[in-house]
Image (cartoon, rainbow, N blue to C red; front, side, top):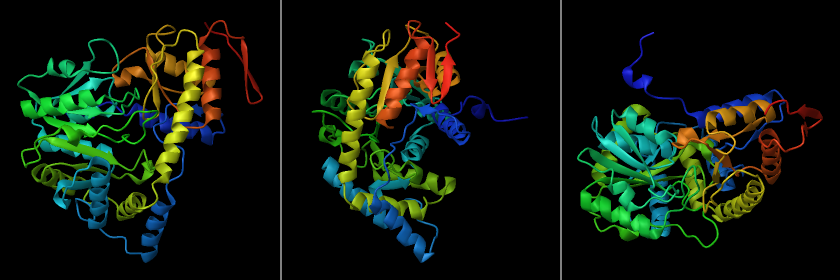
Length: 405
């Protein structure tokens, strides 16, 4: 079978594959616990569901403008003004099929073959593949001190004549790290000075804990002209628990947004009108659902932190946002694929191996599920990995015996 050279370089999305695997196991009645998920378990806002239902009842389910319906663009403009203190026009906004598509078409709009895109590691699993799909080169950058918190110097050290863009994701997937205002200020000013595109992936920006606050990239920008190379990406998937609606957006210069719109028009045409109406309902409706989710996630984080801290040999860094731990399990096994597979096979706990985020020996553990799943999941993991744990474990009525080392 002959396939393209570029397709041969693109791996499957392991996070989506895990979601599918969990669904299959549950359908079989297996007591699987999914600690690898990337979607909140809370319900979509009633305003979103009502808006979608109302439009369905009209039976007028038609094509939409390639860049998004005016009603949703208006809601995004208001959202941006309220949350970023930045007033933009409809020509600065594009609505896409999720934040993922917004990032993808942004890269397609700005990249030429062999140009480079820098992003801190560990990184969201799709960044390298998206860059490669543009015939460009992904450049992951580890913080010099080995932490999850890069400095602008770490980014700067990898910049060369081929560098076209930097992607920053804060709160970060997979680490939950919230980058400091100082770092965001430094990176915004650095990219402006060096005439480099900066894509801010803000999909988790309101899911932040404790005394941490969202950092507004626009506060540190000085160029708001048509020459601006700052692209802000957001969406309804995470904070509104609307992953299945697939609505994201990007804000940038009119030139970049028009280029993105042209690309999207040939890729997917306009985004589903039902999903866009639902997003309008979410953005214009009660916002209490976001705070409710944030409080739930913070509590879940604390529960998982307690359990992980009691897990001998596991090293954790307390996340300040999103809904993930990126925990170091290398004391048990340095190959994260092996340890993740063992946990699925032996105790039916799904985790995401750190290697797909650019750091082996780690597992990404999600706490966006229930406290019960967190507690039971970590208990099973301890039993599977800790040689000092009792040799048997009950999952429901089934007794398991640990017959491996």
